[in-house]
Amino acid sequence: MYFPSKPLLIVTALLAQSATFIAAPSFANQAKSLTEMIEPKVIALRRQLHQHPELSNREFETSKLVASELKKLGLEVQTGIAHTGVVAILKGGKPGPFIGLRADMDALPVTEQLDLPFASKAIAKYRGKDVGVMHACGHDTHVAMLLGVASNLSKIKEQLAGDVMFIFQPAEEGAPAGEEGGAELMLKQGLFSKRKPDRVFGMHVTSSMHSGTIALRSGPAMASEDSFTIKVEGKQTHGSRPWQGVDPIVASAQVINAVQTIISRQVDVTKAPAVVSFGAINGGIRSNIIPDEVELIGTIRTFDQDMRADIKKRLAEIASNAAQIVGASATTEIDHGYPVTVNNHELVTEMRPVIRSVVGDTNLIEPSLITGAEDFSYYALETPGLFFFLGVTPLEQDLSTVASNHSPKFYVDESALKVGVEAMTKVAMVNLGMKD
Image 1 (tube, rainbow, N blue to C red):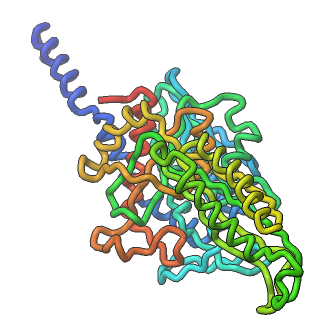
Image 2 (cartoon, rainbow, N blue to C red):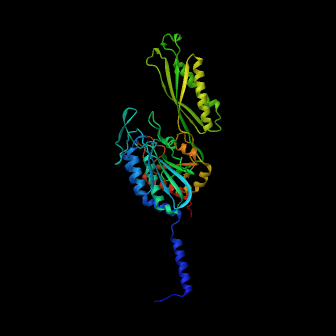
Image 3 (cartoon, rainbow, N blue to C red):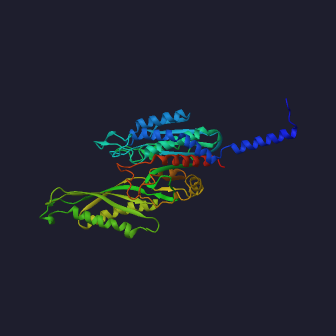
């Protein structure tokens, strides 16, 4: 048997160490390779979820599927939060920060019009009527992608410096009438009470961008949402003798016009944009009967919490005063909805290059303000948050003609899912101490 000399042994050992170092996958390649391995399962899970959608606070089978998949990964799983919410904890191999990753699970009362082999045929009760149910906003993809991220991180948990909370949330689209739900209820029931994440992350698919594109904006990103009902009361009389009553229809016109001055004349729109819109006017049944009452329904959207409070106060005062001018009265009820979704500036600055490394310079864009609302905002009020958008429209499709989110023809290019999984996996890895 040949025994090499000591110098040769040293050189051989050094070469072996060098080879090992070169062969070790970089953190970036690790995220990509893990995602490529899990992609088929992510797509299969998405199709299963898409075919079996469930409405807000009714995500019973969805919740069971999510909990089962998380338990297979060996995670600590808690169910039944905010009715059907599921939370799982992954503990890294080293001490470090605690981060939260969130996906929403509920579908919409929309009848699918896509000819897919896994199209939804589900029917459910909504406001007392039988309706079709569809994942017309992509929450099925959110669940599938976050399960993919959980799988990726579970495979490398010993390398992670810190822990992860996976949040699978019900009722983002809003709880049924008379019920609580969503992010607000999860927090109310103690989601962050034992241990609050140092940072929380979420993403949402959108048909307004092509696959492979991610949109990320610092500061206010999505509007607050508050709906309101104004009841204008007058005095019923015959249409031929209006002087014998008080016309709530004319009073309502005064209210509508006066309310428009809140945005056009009373709030500082250089600070942030805002919208007050009326969506319905209900009152009267005949051409010759002036009714007792008219109901006005509308929405308020803002990008500043102080402005939001100010507009709501002004709305009630102006409605009352405008109605009184013609002898009527007006009472305003506001259904307080979601807060402004604000992306933490420091967090965006840190994570922008991480996301750019997945999609490239040209495919990471800064979107305009979005007047839609998201209850991820509740988490971001508790701890620094970051919420980004993932394009899911095929590259060959014209964005000007594509069906929007919430449409019965909303379509997801499934090749985009790996982009979302890789981006969120990489974001988590960087926050838990992994870097090249």
